[in-house]
Length: 438
Image (cartoon, rainbow, N blue to C red; front, side, top):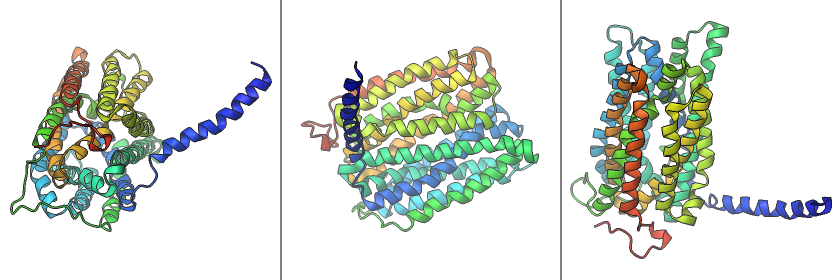
């Protein structure tokens, strides 16, 4: 190619590239103000979660807590969240979702601060931490049953998928900030002589205080006008039961698999490669979350082009290939790269899944639907976390077994989801015969 030809080519490609970028960003323009504020408030909640869940599986063993007991704390957290969801969903639909988002954030900060203040190696330490896990489970349930329903309402149908994609981007970036914050633990120890355990404590208390900014912002938003008109609170969505049941069956299988691996990935790195969380946190939580968030921006465009259901199936199936490869990696950096690609692909399906559920269920049953699907995801996920921790603690072949079990469950879920929803699209995709919600 001559220099002149190259010059003409680049001059033509420049504007075309900007046009493509502008077309891509058009998806995110025109978002309602309160939807943007709600998404902005989530930054502080997810940052606190990034610190907490990104370090807890290492922080507890550093205090002398056994690996099975560490897994049990995660299990209590999840079981309480799952069982509470059944009750909170119908109440939120009837009495208002905003207060659940606000109090969920406040109680979460209290739970995180408790883990930072109370030593696990004292007489009453572990009982208090289990109580804090119960509080954490309650807060997660309050947030889970109301957040998606509130965002779907504020964004409107036209911007729902885009709003959830933007929400996921903000969530992953803030989660990454939380993960990167674990990187200060090493310098605190080396420069100031603050041990890893004490450094975790300062980190937890500080992030708990910052996390209160989220509920403070949400408290200024308007309350939902969509309420149940029935005289009693409805705990299971009646109009949307068929959609909720099918969606939940697929979710249970994904949850069982994910629970064995994802919450314990840093524990696995500690056992397999002897890497502590001041190194694994910034990479496996920080970098991982940033890349997931950026990749997720393409989800609305992909869903609009090939359909929401196909997007979910394609991204989840692709991620499973990398998941099953993790046990065969030979060093921490390779394992981190494989895990990041796996997470990027798997989490691209997250906003489209949420949008699919919120688009198919009746508007006044959105919190109830979120409650049921969250509970039926969180409960098996928390149970399998204990199973995964127990197997990893055995070492040898058992250290890899959770990954193989997870892969089998993922493939089962993806197959079922395709056959259950292959002919279904969101109302705005103008499908002629969606699944009826009756």
